[in-house]
Amino acid sequence: GQCVTHCPVGALSERDDTDKFYAALADSKKKVIVQIAPAVRAAWGEELGLSEKDAAAGKIVTALKQMGADYVFDTDFAADLTIMEEGSELLHRLAEGEHKYPMFTSCCPAWIRFLKSQYPDMTDCLSTAKSPQQMFGAVIKGYYAEKLGIPKEEVFSVSIMPCISKKSEHILPTMADAGAGQDVDLVLTTRELVRLIRADHINPADLEISPFDSPIGEATGAGVIFGVTGGVMEAALRSAYFLVNGENAAPDAFKDVRGQDGWREATFTLAGKDLKVAVASGLGNARKLVKALRRGTVKYDFVEIMACPGGCAGGGGQPMKDGLEQAERRGNHLYFLDDISELRFSHDNPAVQALYKDFLGEPLSEKAHHLLHTDHHGWKMPREERMDEK
Ligand code: SF4
Image 1 (cartoon, rainbow, N blue to C red):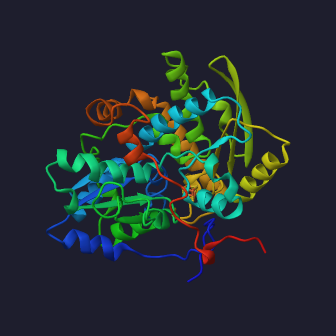
Image 2: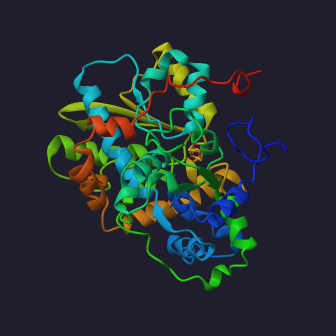
């Protein structure tokens, strides 16, 4: 059928992949490992009649375990990892001196497709950091499987996302770096999660809260705000500040990038220089911003773009209610979760620190490049999926 949501990639139609999840659960040779994205926790309860307060992410963990999932992890961990890599990449780029165009965030696959099809000459402005979903998939199969005592070939890696575009991201030929098939085997949307819970006759009101599985259960408030427009930028600036100064800024020092305006800008001081940043959400705003950059009427160092208005909180895979208003409410909930988090900086995540210490070495290391970065030229935009403006 037609995509009836506010899905930014109009060509995609609603798909139901829940049967693939059941098939993996029924396969005794597979270990099913699930990751849950930040924005999912702000929306899954809406259709199930749970208040925001009652819709704790730990209840999704319980529901998935009841269905038969072997491990359930938090994508927030990989969001923190994305920040370590992307923040380091930004500092590296700034150290190179003046650039004509800014570095763009790369965690929204619909935005990447948009840029590659509409302004292919700007593809190299994208950060090479993979999205949290793909970083997670790569480290699960490429590192943690062995720690958990599972051959990586037996891992069936599932992600639950607010996003329909993630369904085309995980099958890209460039997203198979761990050497055991695709790094992420299946993507389910928040709506599909709700369908699974209903189909299994799980009463959401009865669900206990379970912790995410270790060793990567820990996450930070910086990882949580990935789900809201401006959140990636804010989290990256918190860590870039630390990397430059060796100490943390106040957690809310970069909150000028918050808000629901489709295109916002701010200037901060980093490494003794002015850092000009901009945040846009919605592809119409993205186009305006890119055109202004190309005309030279604006100049930025770092730009975050999310295809869905309001960011992933308003993603095309979320329960369908009135768009932007819901995105704003869910986004505020994510800021609340950040505010009450014990850890608010990605670099303070002990699981992230341990992963660098035990395996990756440091951000941008050879191993980090292999598993956590990607070549945006490694695949072509299929002609039929181009989003040409009529
Ligand atoms: Fe997906 Fe929308 Fe988030 Fe982009 S902004 S990653 S399309 S949910």
